[in-house]
Length: 489
Ligand code: C2O
Ligand code: CU
Ligand code: CU
View 1: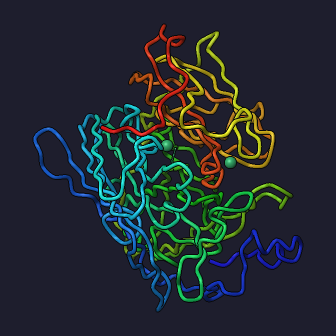
View 2 (view 1 turned 60 degrees about the vertical axis):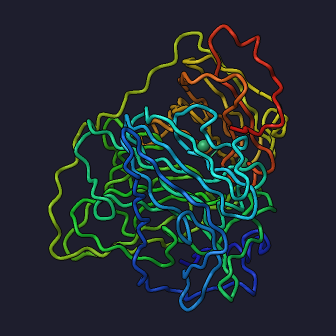
View 3 (view 1 turned 120 degrees about the vertical axis):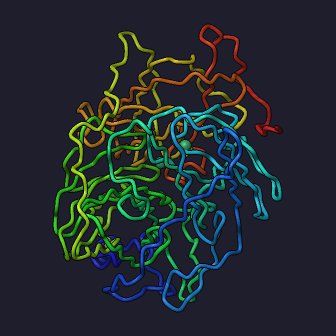
């Protein structure tokens, strides 16, 4: 769990204030034993209502969690003390959510990766006052994927997520391929977050709202479990990896260097499995991987930094994350299909509309987020090219509503395991990324979707813009200024 590189970094750069070590931190053992059973977020139970799946999500503050041995930590959670339940739905389902804000401050709940009308999106305009219940409703009309939900209140996202508000929303496709799908057994979510604790166990929030990248912690929790192990019972296990950290970038793989298969990117299955030994995930990104185990063995999921520490680039450090303990004997698994059924990329049409987004410190095209300004107007169904030109240190870029493909990173195709449908892309220091995006058809000229950096400190500082999707041909008639930004329905 410790950073292997901590002494080196401390010695070389004297960056204690931004890399974390502070004498009042809880440091834990140098070699934790990984004896805490991995917590599996419970599946949310929909209430049976004719033709609709209804879920209730209560956002709770002042809860108590036991992460560290013998210590209690005050946390926030959704229907529980930390993180949320896993919502599992199928393509074609009609869903109704009842999101009740039991915090003592306003928040929102955004469905990250969901294709839905902008009013249901849970972005900064769909504010939920303390005590209020917000009831979005939509039909699941997209490919099977691992999506997630988290607060998105303007300037408050980093703190609300850090305290514990986030959860998974899994979409199944009844016509999909035969993949491991026994939740918590061979289909296992791994929500990865870094934290820092005070000696008394309190969450240390220092850095959440300061510094170049905001919060970078020295302890990793997986599904809210410190130093966890998972008992493997089947030959193949599908892990759904979510980087739900504020700023940290992980390169996930196994300590023994074993290879595994990536089967899905953020928003759905690849065409066929891609064999790798590491996957890189920046905040907000997901990947689904399938790992093979042999009877009785042990393995360690870890993260290995690769970049040299450079001034103003985000550091990658080494962490151990999850010990895997394989049963003897293991239950056999069906072989992974060669064809996963993921949609092939659709090339943008000749003359596709291009938009350019220049990223600087924490601005996009030289502007900070303005809740009343519509930055971009997109005709429904348009297939566009979005170019992100990063002129400074590392960022990433997330677009609401639309699954996109990465066409190029600095002029080259992305690695094969990133060629599936995405909603968030990492943009290294000074890099240029081109995306191909086929926008949806829910039109609303006055309710915007967001695009932004998902490093939460940057997002909160205003590294975000707003776009509306409108009837083709009406672009020029759309107001570029909207009301103060609160929906009241
Ligand atoms: Cu994960 Cu705009 O958010
Ligand atoms: Cu989102
Ligand atoms: Cu950023």
